[in-house]
Length: 568
Image (cartoon, rainbow, N blue to C red; front, side):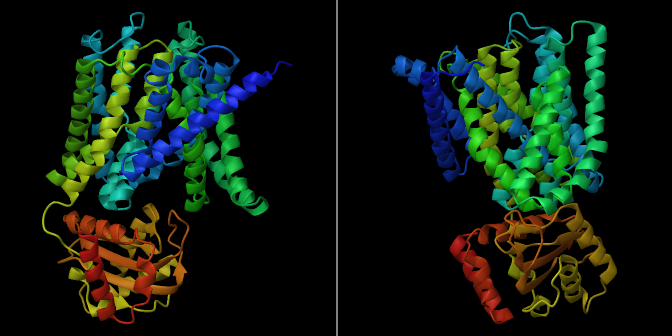
């Protein structure tokens, strides 16, 4: 059995340590400036690759990252494992039921935000292939399908992080954006799986192509039906008979590797299998939010940085930089996605400002486009100039998404939680100790003395809670709903000394629960209050300070002071 020599082991360990270390440091710096971590991780690869280190210290670059040989194979194997696990996490973010639970808005936004970019992208690639960087030997149909797919998908992890930073992740607007991104990514990856099959050695004849298509569709249908059912029923046994969180982590990784191996065998890239397995695992209600976060952190802090940093080792970003191509790709990608998101939002009945917010939210491409671009580069579909343009487009669209959404949703009059609260709707000590019980208790306080039907309000809030839990973390939960015929927004606040499980990402029970009811066609107040609360409760001390209040007056004074201090 062949093995690495002592020198090769030394180089492998050094290169992995340097790559991970620089990527993590720059990723943390990027997040300190409220930018996606992938921006810093890509920059690490640029600094360590032929663009910088290869230009100023070529011997050191060749020592650490040799382009051929056993060490190159070892690094490629680590990067392949990293991308497989990264797509597992991306798949776990997908909740297909969200698309249909959003009523008529999310499906319309989903269709529009993928069909319009796909059609425009295919047309541009078909009529302007040379200008857009098609590889000289690439099939024009495959190139057009690739570019259309690259312009259609969104970066679900980046979008989710942006919405969390804005305090909108579990708002109605946030759910529409997430639902559309889920649909776009799922359809986009299925299309690209077919594209990869077309260029692989497994498809040499019409029968081979049809066989690959059949296997792909059968695997997709199987994993999302029978596979999802089996995982759902196996998860309680994993939780009961293995130690947490190691049991769930191992279970997820084993299934992801098996799914990746199967799709690689049928001629589709391994990442497609791990992505679908992630969808099936993430859909299980037995998988707690805290377990999902741990799996995400395990991959995002170790494997994802190595993969994104390794991209910079493959291309010289200076010699392969083409300004007209970069600007052209950025313009086409942005216009396509903004147009698709905006028209879909308006089609679904959203306001002009919210429709634009949806468009800019979906415009974030992040790591998904970079992954597609790398696979297309390795398959000789595109040249290095287009690959660099796609990487820059992915970074710019991700960076611009958050600030522009912040301007759109915060525009207008400043409205705060205490503007809609009254002493009658403040419960210092909640009696209920379950999520549903708290919803019913707060709904009862809101409906008392009004013409609102208590059963209708409770049903609306609970339906929203079942669609996506409203625990925001750090001791805060904000169950909310839009109620038809509501004359004005209503808010109730309850404090719990024991805490209530609202399935928050950090696993903490909610000690401060805010029930928010808004009019059916006026989501602006909902977004303002959710954003305000998320901003205030970023401070770990906020929930304990609220729990120390002894009366409604103390609570209002604290909230007004906190808003002033936070400059909201």
